[in-house]
Length: 174
Image 1 (tube, rainbow, N blue to C red):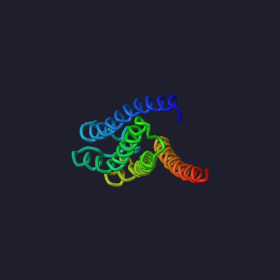
Image 2: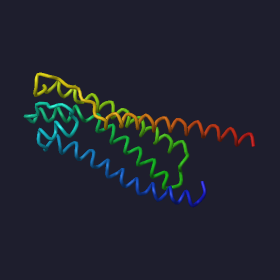
Image 3: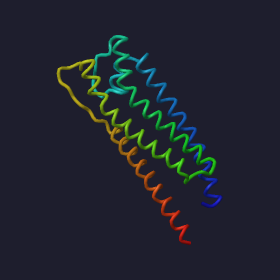
Image 4: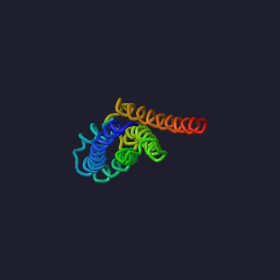
């Protein structure tokens, strides 16, 4: 990578790292705020639940917080690993095994977060009880995109590992 390209990567990584830290902070803060202090209808429709559920007591809020916590923590961990990767990019460490490991961890955590998020609505409805007699499982496109992007990032990380191996073999031949 020439110096101009590396400088551009460094600048972009620095900016993106700040955005990732902001997203990480917002993800955790909003999760806590919405389940511990938000309105029940906003909770049921906007965060962690794609079905209407009974959220009436502090106990219901605690159950909601605990059921939706795994997806949030997995996403937070993925964003943390993404920020670590971007910090390495800032230092010019783009193709190292450590940087690739951060990318793969981000991918897996994002994938797991998307799957955990898909399971939240049925669990909430099962534990708290739906507001209607009819149960609907709603799969949000954002959850599907999260799973897809997580899987894609993991595969790209695997490709980068193989590319490093091929480059090392070629260096030995020459």
